Image 1 (cartoon, chains in turn orange, yellow):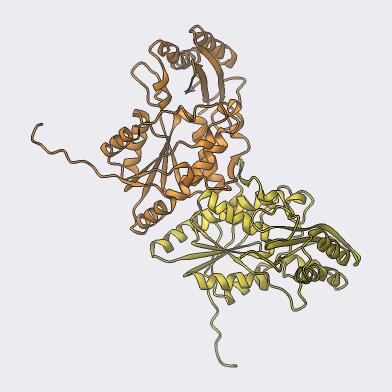
Image 2 (cartoon, rainbow over the protein chains, first blue to last red):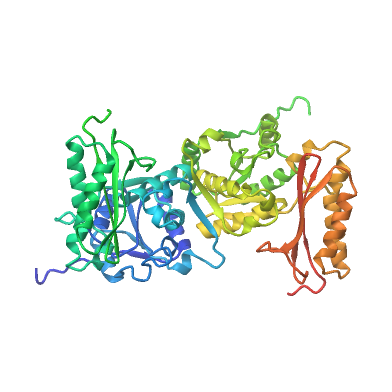
Amino acid sequence: MSGIKIEVNIIEKITTVKEMQRHSDQLRYQGRSIALVPTMGFLHEGHLSLIRKGRTLCDDLVVSIFINPTQFGPGEDLEAYPRDLSRDIYLLKKEYVDVLFLPDAEELYTEGFQTYVELEKLPKHLCGLSRPTHFKGVSTVVTKLFNAVKPHFAIFGQKDYQQLIIIKRMVIDLNFDTEIIGFPIVRETDGLALSSRNAHLTDEQRPAALTLFKSLKKAEELVENGINDPATIIDAASNLILSYPETSIDYIKICDTKTLEEMVIIDREALMAIAVKVGKTRLIDNMMLHPLSEPV
Amino acid sequence: MSGIKIEVNIIEKITTVKEMQRHSDQLRYQGRSIALVPTMGFLHEGHLSLIRKGRTLCDDLVVSIFINPTQFGPGEDLEAYPRDLSRDIYLLKKEYVDVLFLPDAEELYTEGFQTYVELEKLPKHLCGLSRPTHFKGVSTVVTKLFNAVKPHFAIFGQKDYQQLIIIKRMVIDLNFDTEIIGFPIVRETDGLALSSRNAHLTDEQRPAALTLFKSLKKAEELVENGINDPATIIDAASNLILSYPETSIDYIKICDTKTLEEMVIIDREALMAIAVKVGKTRLIDNMMLHPLSEPV
């Protein structure tokens, strides 16, 4: 390829809310459609699949990178959250992203900040139990990003299934004019769900991290074999995960896909969701379970 | 004027959020600016002054009428809140309002509704103390109205001063792209602040209702005479109000205009705010007090 000049795609970097709003107004005034992929950076193939999905939906694709302090609780990994902005920008350019929205914390949380968006029920399950303020931070910052970017579409990964249905509910309840698109979990070839936090795993921890996916596959197999008792399935998953050192289970739950309430019998499509700490790294994964006699 | 045909102004009535959003998108696409005056109907001169202000700011003026159930607490006057839609529409047409946004409660609060917008500090003062869920309902419904109408400007009366600064703070915190315009209190010739709830007052109760304004004027006079002790001023106001039968004081406060925290000495511009029940009718009023030696 020597001698051939590689065109570098251009990405517009916007750091203030006002500038982002004026840019989006201009696009909408031109009749152009906008999609937003909100991220906390340190992009991996999971993000890129959301970005590629977004690219197919709109004229102008905006990716935001903002490590949102209000969704990290005390003692969580805000400071340790991995960052690599120059690599992120390189990847975004390769995917023909039009705008990188890159506000800093001072831009989004000004002095005297005191307004939060909060859901009453959906956050009181799964990750919300061990991270009681997490989803309040998420719904608040997504509201802010929607008001800044004014997207027609926003794409979220199904790995954070609880986050996805919280955002969908919030959009209905607060009448946001944005369509929420969920996108399937992207996995490594060995099955490990992609996460920026995987960067923290040592080679020795990787087999333990893999037990999340293995547990879900085991559950799928049990359900296909007619087991419909959540406790039996959760026990099997728990035993598999705890057979590895350095693991501690936050939760393993089988719940209703809409309300996230725990199911006592798997008599319809169910969400199996897992959160496990491997060493200091908290990992989540999930899968839909379909019983043999699922109602049509 | 007989023989001259009076043109009846046309107003567009929109009842669904989706239709409102498409309408506003179309206006914005045409480069037109939108102002919103949110009301609960039963319009009076106070509303009309907001509407006239709005009319000067924009190309297209939207007035919403929605008696918002989430801002009424248990035992408050949701059912008794006065209504007269046909008169309201007549008045809106006279003021050349372009759109009446008139959703019903089922349109704005669908099954499973659970998302609220809430401020942490400003609602914990004044009316928020006796109406602990009121402003949560207000900030939530205003968020919904902003997302439905997408206004460039929204006009609120200063009679609900606490509401006004809560909305202003919310707009900053959540990055709404809407400029909030406050408009001075409109009064009857005798000084009574206009309110839809005044319709509930009997002729006998009216002198008692007037004591809110008289107390504020008395306070203004005291401050102009060099009194800077809030307790002295509040005592004088309290004595005046309680000298009438059927009155009970919810609060009389002198507070910081930005934080609403009570002031111990009036050494800068201060908000004096009053809430009184006259019979079953709850009235509010307020005024800015300016000490003699106000810092520049």
